[in-house]
Length: 75
Image (cartoon, rainbow, N blue to C red; front, side):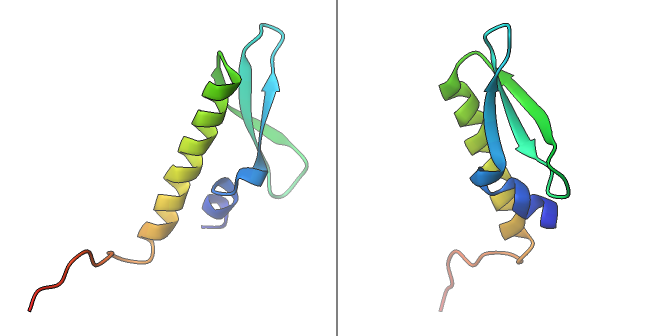
């Protein structure tokens, strides 16, 4: 759960540019100062979209641990 919370925070992500011109998304390790490569994209916008997608994914996983969400009730 702690790892999901870490991955759901955008402050724990960064984008670096590789020598070949591609952009790499990286996430920090909560227990050290190391960064881990996650994806590579052709544009900065693509890299940020990938990060936003990962944040959304982990946020939904955290939400799912709280049980089912009531959408509608009937009388």
